[in-house]
Length: 450
Image (cartoon, rainbow, N blue to C red; front, side, top):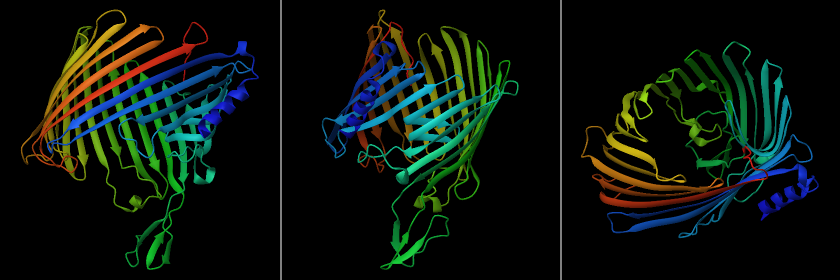
């Protein structure tokens, strides 16, 4: 109700604008997902969850450059009413003024600017400095995670950041970013005498035979650098994310080289990353190990009916090596593929194919089959198997309405028990997904939406 009241207030604020100057566009999506599972212990589990999403955009609110955009999503499990059902979330609701060089946004919005990513309730300004650079600045309270609050206060958690992008150099784009996020968290308790390692966030207080560790509010602080360069059919990309919460260390490093023309696409990539752990979390005091990936990809298109593609990736994690590979062909409106994986996570081999075919003008169908054999540790124990088949029907009877229905049947024969599947043997799952989307516009031509 509080959320609806906030949206109603926004509508009231917009009402004085001249109706003939405001253009309105929107999208409503209704979706339903259901599955039924049968496991070897003769028990079955089911779920039937529905989703409703609405998005609305109003442009020209008294001024051609001013707009208001909002989106609301709610979901409900019709079989098992959990304590948080119905789950409703205001995804975004903000005003935006877009000038020739300056863009201002105020309200709930999603930010992705260099290393800074998150949803905030606050403001953002983007300024273009002639042809030299674009400066993006944002700050605001973090959107609440649960449903207890519609809006959270600054002290509950906030984020701020800066992203500067320059394309002045010939064919080269360089970005530099800074990001800081804080969040109030609960203290941790431990038995007296157990102690904690030295850490910047630990403030130990002896209370009734226990240690109370009070984390500070700093959750993440990052520095980022990204680079893009292109010449002819070649493009180079590099990215470096540095964590500066406690000490300066590399959080993610990535580089890739790509060649692409009308028929051939080749690329090579190297990726280094460490687990993302909040600086004010108890997990930040444990040892964290990085993983590396080196991969190569290729795609050759002979004509619009046939192509070949392949990929190979070498993985390094905690002193162990592994690899994954895939190869396949694109045939007509579908593809067939073979994939394998070896290493720390076990072994698997799989084959499959998908096809998408138009039946009539507004109706097309999709179908696919996939088979895999796997085990959780390399060279140990028998292999389990899984087979899935999917069938979908997609209809667009008019320009502003689309309907999709898709069903999947999954059969697994598990040879060894796991924590998630303690009963080895045959397991059968049936899933069904439905989605209908409708758009409306104030004029005859579609309008872009965020």
